[in-house]
Amino acid sequence: MKFLLNPPRFLFFTGKGGVGKTSIACATAIALATQGKRVLLVSTDPASNVGQVFGIAIGNQITPVADVPNLSALEIDPQAAAQAYRDRIVGPVRGVLPESVVKGIEEQLSGACTTEIAAFDEFTALLIDGALTHDFEHIIFDTAPTGHTIRMLQLPGAWSGFLEEGKGDASCLGPLAGLEKQRTQYKAAVDALAYPLKTRLVLVARAQAATLKEAARTHGELAGIGLSRQHLVINGVFPESEAAHDPLAQAVFIREQAVLTHLPAVLRDLPTDQIELKAFNLLGLAALKQLLATAPSAPDASPQAAKINAPSLASLVDDIAVAGHGLVMLMGKGGVGKTTLAAAVAVELATRGYPVHLSTSDPAAHLMETLAGSLEHLQVSRIDPHEVTEAYRAQVLATKGAKLDAAGRAVLEEDLRSPCTEEIAVFQAFSRVIREAGKKFVVMDTAPTGHTLLLLDATGAYHRDIVRQMGSSGRHFTTPMMQLQDPTQTKVLIVTLAETTPVLEAAHLQADLRRAGIEPWAWVINNSVAATAVTSSLLKARARNELREIDAVATRHATRYALVPLLEDEPVGVDRLLQLSANLSTTSPVSTSTSPNL
Image 1 (tube, helix red, strand yellow):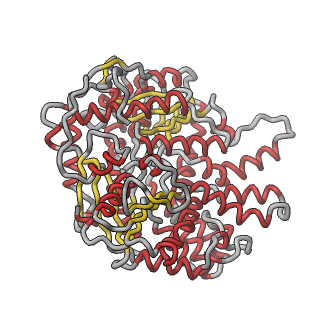
Image 2 (cartoon, rainbow, N blue to C red):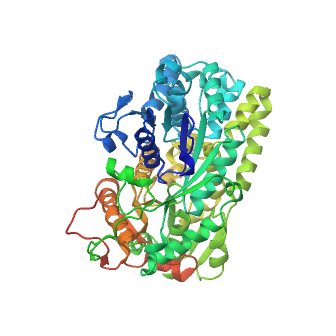
Image 3 (cartoon, rainbow, N blue to C red):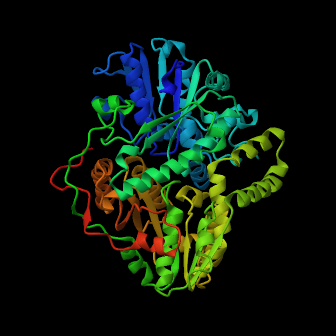
């Protein structure tokens, strides 16, 4: 593997959730320790318990791994780090400021940006504290800070007091004064990250357009601030040897190879490795030792077929259709198929004769091209996320930014590069069609998180103002937030994949929505191999590995759910979209005679 040749002291693995960062980081740590190197593995991934992988309790202290000589590990809980960060900031003002102001600060500090910078706060010492890490030749991290966080740390204005008028309240990160260490220490940590002889950044992706696009964005963002020594690892590539006699396996192989042939231009010159998809689940020392091996996996001789009784997407649409109109919002992390499933729901409703407005942010616009005008009762509109985000940034800079000094404006400009900004801008652009849901179905493929909803003036502050002004008049009124909170008017569908990290991320999204008083109506598990018949040994193994996550969704997370099969053909066009919502076959490649190999 190229990324393991002459490794520097620090290795960071970064990529979208579910691409395999933690597994590859663990396998790398084991490989280097086996070579006699003294290695510290640092995990901040809540979805992958490194202690469980090695069969020991680790936690937030450096712990030797008895089964792997020369290896120690440390787990950082990003949620606990974020809570400690919030407590340091809110504690001094609790009881001093009005409770409403304190709650506003707490909500501002409840987003993903805060969690990330708090985690960076935790592992800064590992980059700069020689006494803490001098025993280790290599320190491996299963995550990396984003360019947004690093740029914010580099801005002098970001270190102003949080309650200083016109500065700290602009930032979704909150006050950097809440960080435990001094600004000079963060500068030293950022300098260590950018020093190519000390640090290597490994971009991890799958052979999928969405994860490679994210890798390209991350590459450009981090290279722009000096983190130029980067490698690319494409994980879980379907091997050609498995594609010969299974139509679905062949389709997956061809689709992946087409994506790999058209890599984003900025990634083509990076040193690149491919790791083949394995037939086994990546838990346990034996499995991790095999992850980076190039030898093919042993064939899977397990039985192919067994019954599965999972609801279809069509069964969810049956219940949605009862009201005759309403708002349907699909939520989920990038790459899980929200846009495609939104189109499938819209097409299914329209073919039943209901008027439907599908509002999509699909960047490729292929849904617009294949659906627009092709189906009676279906109206399709599209917004450009980049366009509306730039317009939103310009508006905020022209209003809030006009009163700031140069340092404060720089902080605001950087804050407007956060993921929250695009979410707010896109939702505001979508919100104009929400009112149509009283007369027809409105299906949206993008929805804000509960955190963003609670910050949005259009929902939060506007909601409170309307309630205050009209609550005593006896007149009937509905605010946008009330519409989203009312399950008779709005149905939120959480989209995920039958994999550990996507299910965990979806559970976090659900908890976040509940904080905003919005109860998700259903979950949809997309691209399921367990929902189709296969003969490929790799796909049979993947189907068995899906069972635990499907069961977790069905029994722990969702009040209702649907399983959508992985199709041979890309689901573009009316006919293929209808296949997604069709009733499932009564057979799947899952054997009920044995437990899943998890």
